[in-house]
Length: 91
Ligand SMILES: [Zn+2]
Image (cartoon, rainbow, N blue to C red; front, side, top):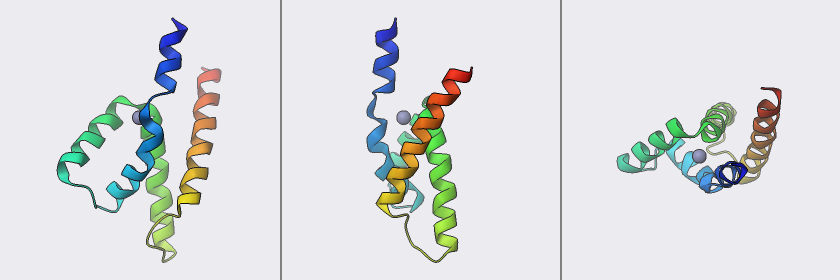
């Protein structure tokens, strides 16, 4: 039913952004890292987000920044959301 789809799209992932950047900064405990990795395996949305975030963080660090600004992270997530929607339509 469509109700299941709606619920899936509305899941908790929005809060994962901060966890991801902490993970990338290696600030997370190993236990949390494992949880995060498990979630990534089950959640294509977060996989895309994490992959893009990783690239962005690498880019920022290459430019001499320590962390990706929260504003950039938010924009990033918006773009990914839009792309995920497009992908679903084409298939
Ligand atoms: Zn997720």
